[in-house]
Length: 320
Image (cartoon, rainbow, N blue to C red; front, side):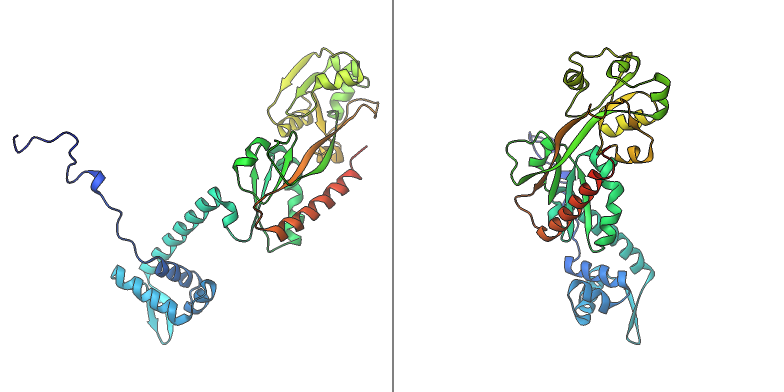
């Protein structure tokens, strides 16, 4: 075999498979330096991570020895970042932030102090988020993470508490009824006047907007009319938030919930399309689910209490 021939499967000495991860500084030293640099104080930085001032100084010295460059200038009992130290501190802060974000993504409950709430997208956008400011003001120490998930995704994800839309998968435990929706035809006041909407049969002149609701237009017509009304046009949208916005813009009549459309009903941007107030379908649509491995029980309990008070206020304000 010639000197230049290679055995099958042989690895070149300089192949990327032989590369090793660069030698990294001690992690404890990196943490101590980043905290001290961010606080611009060995004492305050140490207090954040549970180390004495002398221990922080020792870790910073160890890091400087590893790097072969000074990160702080010591003078008269004070320590000030060097130009290089300031650059290194900024990059480390970004790196630690990326690690925290990655950890929160795959295991949000591991991040102490976070209350992770799983919630359907439209419920979050149309109802929860506009009210969340009051909760955060009342609980300034809380850190809330909203994860918009479909109900069928709950079993495969971590959360402290979930607001889930029916139907609920049978495998989920610790499930409590939360909210009954009232679904009715809604439209803009301008469209109602233009089409002269009052009775169910009048909807034949309208564009019917379909969204992802537990009660369909077919269900509604069969409940009150006995047969399905054939509309002039139909518009299908994936999310309730999109359907409500389309109705607000005058594109048609939507069969939607007084929960998700509560702000539009309150402001008058949407109104009931029909005169008969009894043509409404009540549907138990939302459930509260607690994680079986709940770590933030006290925070979840506080959020639960606030949530139920907000729902009680809703039930006395927009249900006309």
